[in-house]
Length: 395
Image (tube, rainbow, N blue to C red):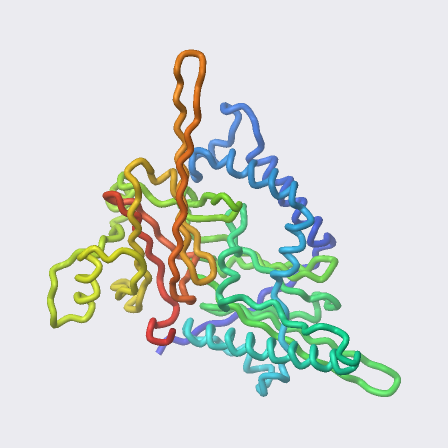
């Protein structure tokens, strides 16, 4: 039996506010990828990113600046709130036991989400009754999935970043503990008055993808009470990172040439289209046979590497589009595929620009690991795969 190890992460004070941290990040991106002469561009950036990465980053920076107030509002609205621990009926020490497998982490997240929703509904009802019913209903902002935060967790700079609302707490009041599959933030505040001494404890656990290097996890508490957890992403192939039309970070598919080179250099198998020899005595072959008969879209297959299950999506793509024209994004319980092809037609002294675009989305299970999405363009089909964190039967 494998024993999950756990360790604490120190919380460091950062004298800046959340807004100042975000502005500094924007300045750093501008310095690294700013618009300069092509010969002056960073060689490293060109080696590890797509050829148009500098232009994409600059566009992202400029559009973020134009929507600054909305961007800051989004960051604050999407922060995690801690949950009062007395809602769970467990001792504080239980929250720092090793989490075990991914399934146990997800169950804890679901439990906390339900408890937080119930707690906020009770507070809203009490506030409404106190004010004579004049105030409208107050509902907590909840995601459609406990893993919805992963779609925005990847940040520019090749790291993963999540934020917690910890206003009123100092670094000494906060404990961060991480294990193989998750991280727990615990806060305890003691308040002493002339008559009594009281304390209340809060906690929150979130899942951490395997692609994030938890050994390099860092925690910083800003001046305005935002706890930021940051860690680099392990994968070195940042050529797969791109942006969609809504400035969302997405996955750029590998071309058939890249897949062939990767297989030779790393001895890794590419995604295989779901065509196989039909054997009615095997349930998995029944699924594969249906897909190979022309049924496109999402399905769940057995993952031979992990022994679990994986999401497999096949999407027909017009031959005009190359891998560089496509991007894939996981958004809550949907996989979104979009493409944009720009063609310049020059005739004499005039030129015309033709743009062809498409977008398709498919409903998928809510427990897809968005950090582990693999996308490849093969033979006019875009193949997308990602591991499922829970068996499909539990959906």
